Image (tube, rainbow, N blue to C red; front, side, top):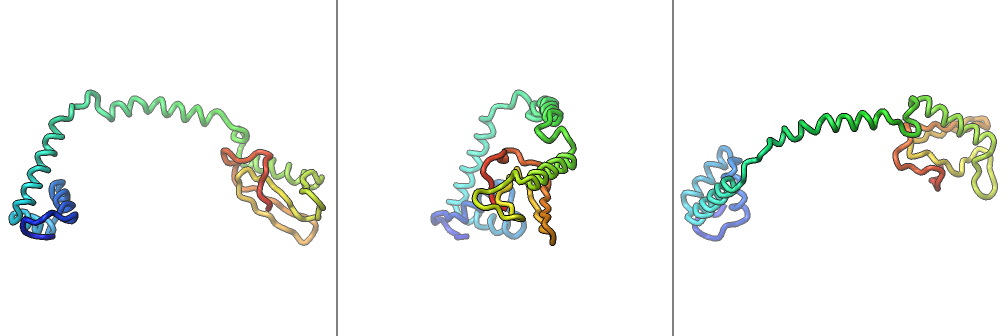
Length: 169
């Protein structure tokens, strides 16, 4: 920090605000107080900052209602909204997740077995050209035989595509 009555640097200004807010401790506080006692410009800045802070505190009206009281009054309504959202199931949320995953996997396996899901052009056995996972993670296992096992992990993501264009797996 510079000493004397020169122009204040950004470092001096940060130290002045930290000192005013009681954030300076130990040696840094002692060193700043020493500088404050030597610099009339710094003392004038400190006095104006203290006056401004006092003016701001005095000009604020007292809050009519305690903020916590207003929040506490809203909590039961928020809890009721969350409970209602949990009780109204989405497409798969009415069922248990493992059952939903099992049903979806069975439907996909049946569709693959019957050849319903086919890409454009020539169809090569054992290759999945397109698979809409609904935003879920997928694990594909190719067996030594003609079987391909597709595991859909997790539940559908909100906003996932439904029957739209998807990425190739």
